[in-house]
Length: 306
Image (cartoon, rainbow, N blue to C red):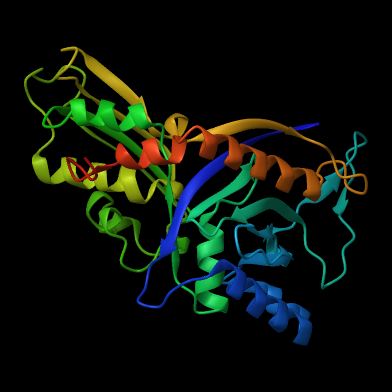
């Protein structure tokens, strides 16, 4: 069995045009039928592949298999204890790959299985934008009490630690990224890490300014899938103590053990992965978890839904 986290998101069209997962899957299948290369997007060596497992429609999810591929300049090599180093034999049309299974339900919920080296959901938005001209955004769903913790810190943020990787997947209009990350990192920087705060020994009555606080909350709400670390510290109006919120641990998720593929033991069995994703979705749905998370959303210092 392979341990995976099943991470949940809200999906929504990010442009004027509507987005329908089943229709996009149909277009992708048609393109692949004409040319197998249609399943691949290569952007300056960042290579993503997408396969349709089931189109979905009605109340059924659209299921994709998404792969992060390694090109010729990024391929691993093999080694043995005698000190021998050599290439892994692959054809020019073959790639080392990391895989995730993605389900998109018609009601705006999306989930995928996540583990070490698994591609992030941002690659799906990136692929659809570049290959099908479909614009869809993914917002993480958080546990409802996380938003309450942030609301309690309003006006009293002490520090935030941010780390972001693969910024090439972000749209050019990066919102909070444009303000929180210095221009010195440039468009091509593979990763960036910053810490903003008053310092451990700074005055205890000083806090981040309102503009920075609003950008932190906007990033927490809308862009966390680009973030590999986000730790927010602030004085809680409720407890009077400095509290810590580790954003990634607050992401709505379910733990699962997936069966191994019989052909590839290091990869989950696709049928079992999609079954577990659907079961987790139905469980959260039956307990109104998605509705409670939506009601607790925190947007720029205000509760979005009363």
